[in-house]
Length: 169
Length: 391
Image (cartoon, rainbow over all chains, first blue to last red):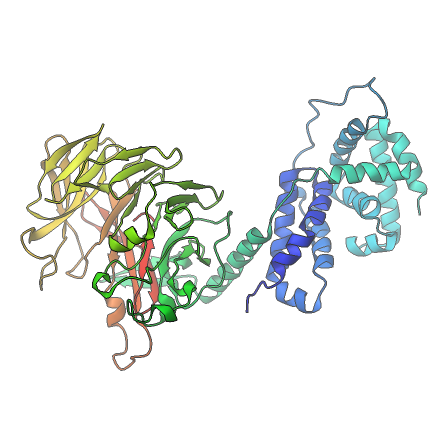
């Protein structure tokens, strides 16, 4: 029997969704690919067990977060800001906001990024996020508060995006 | 507004590039699994060669290959190869009689990475299953692997030509004129990579791999050794004359009086290294008691004269190199030597277990004649072929 029967199908179906999360977590295409490949290799090594009685995607998502947080040493320095978005342009320009947000996210700690990605990109509850990060709900709430506060300091132009977020349950 | 923050996060996420990671993940998982197994099984394996005990630390170097390989070569991300082989899955094979009973996979080349992963390579033509018993020596299509193991050349049936492939990037270059399978089955072909993998000699032509630029060899001459850069080419003709080909012209160096195997040129091009012995070219190489190659010679490429001659140390009549490869160090050339001992070590009463076939690679010091074993590659089969990286 093929040791990896069904693995390629799983990867084919889910890798792009996982890659999007990895990209948000790392802020860098190469690092994201590296991170996801590390995670998928781990999934492959445990594939028989995961395919038989596990939830491969849940395992992969948890591994993605854990691996990302433990990657501090490999994390690249802050994304250089040689070409910051110019002020005075149309404040509603989405692409400029996106660039500013990317740059601000890059300055957060891996754990702060993970909290924001899980809560506001993957739309997970506080409890789910706590479970994935291996911490209490209270810690998730305080981490979220600190992460958003830091984003506001790093990117004052994004304040209008961030203000109401904190009130979201 | 909250939705806008989410929208921006989704917008950034959507910029993630497309990826295709399944094969690479499987490849890495296999590697990790095999490395763990090899580390658990044996960290150090002692081999005995010519009375000298050598220590081999590369687990891939002594791996015994058997049976069907299920994983196929990933399109990219493959680590350097140590060798390739085919083994008919360890079953008996007689040309033209039982070829139909062979599963197609048993006639394919398998490649082995230095870290021990093994892959089947369906894209490379292997055994000519239609071969006639009269022409049984021409068993299959050749492959060639560069000394660094990063490139492999093979015959692609869909492309109807030989191609070279970079194993890490997965890039493939066609590197020969069109040639049919029938032509290959009718006559043998040899592939010779330059040490840097940038040139490939196929039959009577030399190709620059990445551009496909072709240089025809003068009629009647065949490549013996391709240097980095592709020129000058060491060539031999049907009269066994040895020459150098540059700018379309062959300059004949000498005609050996004893069996001679041409090796690589020195880096400055002033010396040609070769192996020779005491067997005159008028006699058959494999007559009883003859030692075919026991001497390393350095030949001046200007005069064609021998400038240095050293006897190999610690070898016997069984030491019968089939091919000379590239330089292993500034003073050592590499050779590939089939090992007849593998089959001698079998229990004579055991007629069901296939023998161990394979070859060793050695480094020979051209200044001292010292012999140093580099690796041993084996597979258990009644018949087959093996190509080590660099030969």
